[in-house]
Length: 168
Image 1 (tube, rainbow, N blue to C red):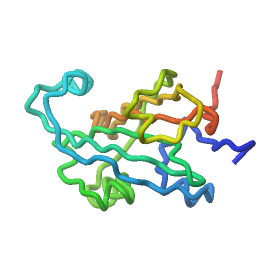
Image 2: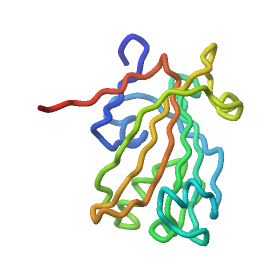
Image 3: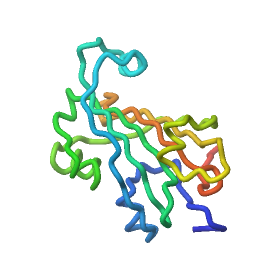
Image 4: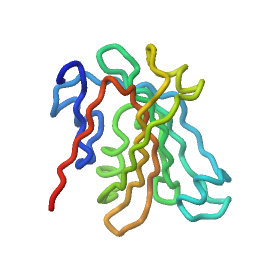
């Protein structure tokens, strides 16, 4: 925690549970939605699949220092992630994927954007006087290059610092 901001490296794929251990930050996860969905054009285009492919849609709020500062919506390809439930989604999805399903998570491509918050996002996040959110859109791949997860994480802009290392 630096000047009231949480530091988050863009170079690592770390879960909130891992950050709790490593950074000693108390992060609580509240599940908002866990549904099986299909036929969503944007998701079909991202995964390059037909409308009959099923996805888990998981929406969660992360609470840090008593405030809902992160809102996440993630889609998992059900052909690879065959089962998810409330307990897994609230605990550690990646722990389940790696230890129970033995998926080899390799890397994520991330895009950072800024935009106005929607009314739904304002309902779930403690945005205070902010009407903008930091958006990190992630495409996450297995070691064989298969896209298995697409997610959008929203953050309150005054509470996070995102860093990476650039090499020449």
